[in-house]
Amino acid sequence: MKKVQTRLTLPHEIEVKQQIDYKKIGIKILLYLPLLIWTVVTIYPFWYMVVLSTRSLAEIFAFPPPMWFGRALAENYRILLDRLPFWRNVWNSVYIAVMATITTLFFCSVGGYGFAVYEFRGKKLMFNIMLATMMIPALLGIIPFFIMMSYFGWINTPRALYIPGAASAYGIYLMRQYITSSVPLALVDAARIDGCSEFAIYRRIVLPIIKPGLGALGIITFLGSWDNFMGALVILRERMTYTIPVALRSFQGQAQTDYGAIMVGASIAVIPLVIVFLFMSKQLIAGLTYGAIKG
Amino acid sequence: MTELTMKNRLRRCYNRMIPYFFVSPFFAFFLVFGAFPIFFALYLSFHSWNGIATSPMVYIGWENYTYTLTDPMFWQALKNTVVMAIVSGVPQHILGLFFAFILNLGFVRLKNFFKATLFLPYITSTVAVSMVFAIFYGYPFGFANYLAVSLDKIPFFHAIFSLFNLEIPLKWLASPPLMIPTISTQIIWRWTGWNTILYLAGLQTIPQELYEAARVDGAKWHQVFFKITLPSLRPVMQFAITMSVIGGLQIFNEPFIMVGKNGGTGRAAYTLAMYLYQTGFEWGYFGGAAAISYIVFVLIFIASMISRRVLRSDEGVS
Picture (cartoon, rainbow over the protein chains, first blue to last red):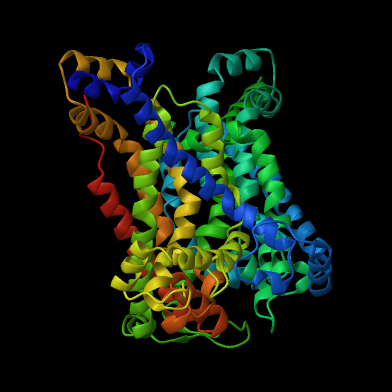
């Protein structure tokens, strides 16, 4: 009996034994239970958010709290649009996130290509400097970032929120790793012998191969930009220029916080991401763990 | 003839420049948006300045630093931040490791479903979710209080609640001892899945031969765990834990949204990032804020060095 117990923890063991063993089934259930509980914990806030978005303020403050949909969605939506130029705010978020993604993909793939396929003097030093800059915490830059943006006259402009981060060290590092492991140097050499220019090699040969890597970096960038609150809070001072997080938070300060309307806004901010995620969770997870594990 | 060699030379020179052309955008961006601002902040931290371009910067030496380091609010923010980083950070990794182990067992079905749902919180907007959590923990109407009140009706839980002197319904976000744990639940909710995925990827890189060899040698399960699994996970743990230390010391969104810019009752959830934000953007002491950012930088640097040192991966399995 004891021997069975020692084997249970070894993954491949469990698959090998075929006969019914009730103790083993019990342990299986015990192992599934925490997973199922955490799944509920994970999904519940999304559920709660959508439920509250369909409830009036009185219903939200009621006890017991609402657990199923109500009828106030249209009313909450109207309040949201009354108080905020909300679709304008959504557009700002989308615009900034898309521009951040495009610029980041371009500059990071170019940089990653440079570090992956060439040997040149000072390469190691330059690469190490780049890696070292990743250690600088974002918080250190927030004051000078604001001052600089005000000197440039970029306060209240979207470009303040996507240009400074366009050539991120993290992105270049990720792209270099990806190119090194997926693009054979022989292919680059062959193209060169065929008379392909260096930029054409990057554009015509390397870019198509690294599409999955670009996809992952693109999603990471998009999500990061969508969630960028402090930067947007500091730069965007006009209602019309707010991104969704800043717009939602501007709701808070008002005399009566209208939770139903906030939940409509929050749902609009989150649900599209959830839907996109459900379609590409596999690629996204693979991309996100790529840098961490293989690095 | 000379023209040809000239052309060749130009060509060679051009070829040699190509790699630099590809890697230079990073350095250009870094100089403009990274290095220069950081040095400027250092310069600024020795001056008194209100952030208005036309008003002069006055050199005041170390005063910003001495002021910050003697400001009780700074110490409170530091204490809160460290406590919040620990309270939110430790469970993330314990739960993450736990779920990764379960998911790595051969028999678990629906692996991709679990991976995706576990990971879901990571892709949200922290501000939107903080607002949901703020309502969830609302006093007295939130769902958390509904659970607390329901549990309180059961004698066993009632005894526990009265043992800890808890008044039901609870002021989750307004009574100082509860605020940090409450806010931390959201951070744990968001990052547990991320850590699970990292640890799972780490577990999958451990060669099966190691386990087989251990089994042949008759190793007990705890020996396998402590001698093979954990040491092999060290590099991943080093990365994951260092990331949470760095992130934990910069917590801003969650407390800022859930309890407000002043950190709530008695500033019990006031973090360093909030202190930095208020000093600069609300009170207009840009020099002081720059000094705070350097102090925070040093703290983060020391903390990440310690976590790297503690989790050094050079003694992994050979």
